[in-house]
Length: 132
Image (tube, rainbow, N blue to C red; front, side):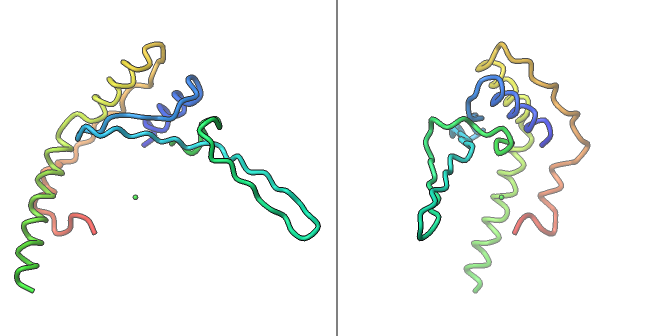
């Protein structure tokens, strides 16, 4: 997460663009977190808050950084999700993300990737809990 936050800070600070990438599934993602464009207008009766959600607002650096048949279906889905999760996370995701950033922003010096941990991701196949 720290590495991603550093990269987001660089991209927004140097290029003023939202952070974007292509997911391993081939879907484009854009995080257009913009600074608040709010203005309070005071009248005699009340204060009205006007909010501007324009794409022309600068990108925010800080925001750029959640029965039996049913059981059989659930068991099948559980197994399928675990295997897909394993296949996805065995791929060099951060390496590919860094490569895409470097291709898109060749004049930017990105921080080195964090060291890889020693978690055996295959243990997800036998874990009591996967996600809720």
